[in-house]
Length: 98
Image 1 (cartoon, rainbow, N blue to C red):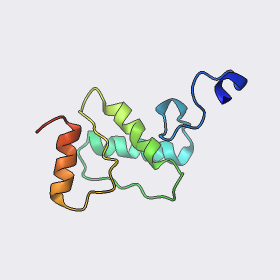
Image 2: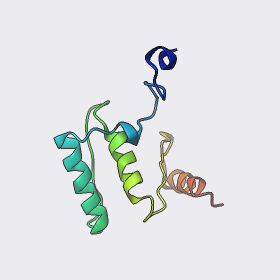
Image 3: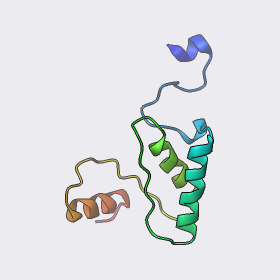
Image 4: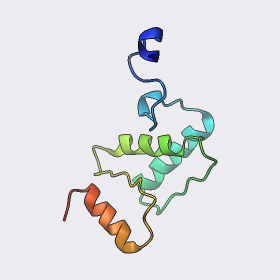
């Protein structure tokens, strides 16, 4: 409906954020650069905290896009990870391993 009326090439309101629609605002771009440095230098875990809708998932998608040729990146979107076993099973499933 929207696509034909506004002559859009894709759906305007997707459920998941797309790296094609990334806008490098000062705060999120600084966070992206910091997380890239953390991963590049193996400095340990990084933490992103914020209210819903501020771009945390998009930021992680941008990191996944940045490192896709270096690492095998997976996205754990399940909220049902309650134990270490659950997390390991999710990681193995995303990596297509038994």
